[in-house]
Image (cartoon, rainbow, N blue to C red):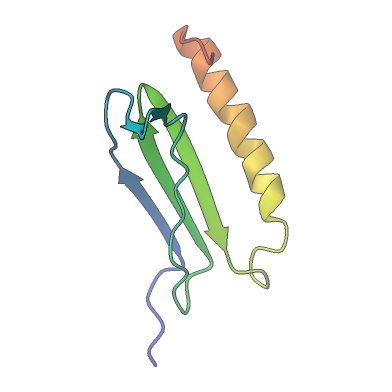
Length: 90
């Protein structure tokens, strides 16, 4: 099998602008999960739902052994972006 010329995939999956309901229960969030592929070290997927963004990180344990640290950095940078643009993170 030929390895791809890249090892990072970043994708955006737009979701519904308003809330969705199932059998009377309101869906409170969407959390993206991607499919790991051979030769890909990290996949970052962003999805929107009801005015919010959700991020999902899927990584190769050998190539990205501390994936949790990336989530911490992502949280910090999203908070900094919200502050810089005057957007509430509520």
